[in-house]
Image 1 (tube, helix red, strand yellow):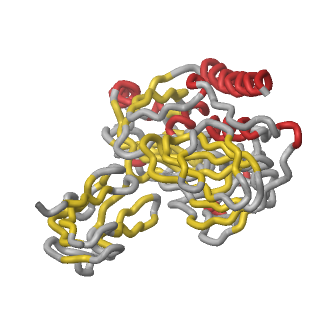
Image 2 (tube, rainbow over the protein chains, first blue to last red):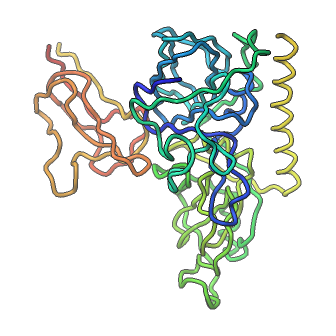
Image 3 (cartoon, rainbow over the protein chains, first blue to last red):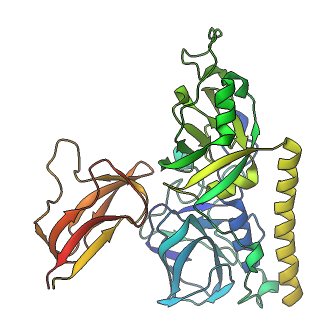
Length: 327
Length: 83
């Protein structure tokens, strides 16, 4: 068991997501930065899909009631065990009675804390991920509160010698203040006038203060839609279409005033034109960005996006092989 | 020389000096405050987070306007420490 002394600003249990229910309105949820979450799990000997804690800006203070291993990945943060600083991206032994505490972050947004065995909340619809909007999964479907007690699943015996493995630099994530985020254009980008279509990939947008697990608002430029007679069933605003499904990562521009990128707790459908979709590997990068950091968009093909996703899988596999080689 | 402590935004968000639009500011420049006194709010992810002073002293200045978007680490107030 782990006791939550301080929960941090917004800390939730997340895994790699809940799949198969998008069509009935359930987004995948899961870790906003899937790569960092998977690395934390691999470091402690868990399967990549084990449940971890995801922090937001300010992480928790936790007391451990069992010996085990931990790893913290994601944002750059000051992390201590009993007041002594520990290395991020590294598997570290923690003993019964010790207190793990998160200090301030200096880059990024979210940390991932994996614990050997994985967090053992009850799976809901095949996942332990918290989806707060429906009070589903995680701890009572909500962010952690002081006094919560988290069950940790039994550890696999074969990984007891994994302590102190440090993830090499090239397999870590480095949150920056500007990133190029890759998009696949469509389905409704033809509704933008030609100048706005160009503007989308030519200009820089700023991550606003309204950015959470559901969506990120990105500001800076007015986008204009072509003039047309709105079809039957569509709303009256030029940015409205007849309702359609929204992919995770979908970019919309209600009234053209700002962009909204749907994240892992996405709204699954609605009546705004979907202008482009942020590719899955770059949603990890966007998940570590905050106001007033900036992005620009680069359009790529679906084939290229799928290749990049396969590369992410290969990076994780190479980490598994590196660890297996030294332990 | 009086020692000036700076209070920084712990995360990005919208800075408010009032608990709601019609109430008086939570604290005013010139006011002497104790440790832990709430001096402002920051709205982040649709939650209002209280910003407390870590020191006792006199507020010399607020460095952000009501309703400003503030970055993480941005200085939002200065306190002249009193022991």
